[in-house]
Length: 321
Image 1: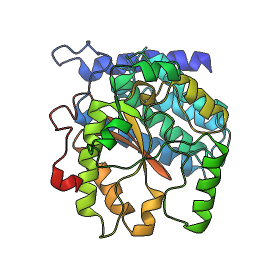
Image 2 (image 1 turned 90 degrees about the vertical axis):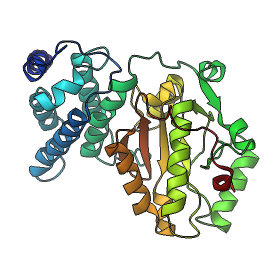
Image 3 (image 1 turned 90 degrees about the horizontal axis):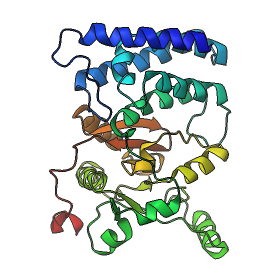
Image 4 (image 1 turned 180 degrees about the horizontal axis):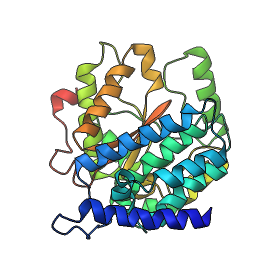
């Protein structure tokens, strides 16, 4: 398989030159560059086509079948133009995806319920890597807490500057007992999620989450709770811990540089608001603001470079009220 991967990467690079050969600056593929919307749309369409091919055989594909198809398909121009611009290069991108295929194990905790779901998540997450893979990740929780690039959400919430909800992870026996009792006494009062271990994020992401929360409040049926964020910035250390527990925690991850969030989705079915939220997130993706990945209970969102900077962080007081 390593030989096949090397051959495929070589073809991938040639495909990029063929696709971009007649454009000014065709050979300059910068890490972190927000590729053309048409490139991203073609990439997402190619992902859907690969998944359809994998599913066509009937039943879950074997690891060997998945590897063979991916090695062949990832050299196509729709993939090449994106993967060739990721850090540290297209070969690393291909190995990242194949690693998830080879190491996949079903887990009730994972957002990837089967191998096809894992492949979809791994492929779509390469857009996050395209945008933010050139940035150094926060290695440990202490690095996150020391960062001057991140906003403290607890402080923003106490100041009335957030339009979305979240709750902190509890680490005490009493706190866990209270939440367990809450789930029994008032089922559906809150999403079934552990909560945020680190309540901080980049300003651009907070701004965009505020905007989405305000739009969701207008679109959702009356009585729908505010947008609920289940995960934000994580350290590589914590990401690896989640992976060891069976979660689909990929590396590199935009969570580990502060530009990604997970938004609760399943809970909003109780309020007939999940379809409105899905449509809203996909519209923001179409507008070029986000990369969106359906991960079941929660949807992963990653803010695009440049998005959110022109929006106000402090929302209208009427919206806060």
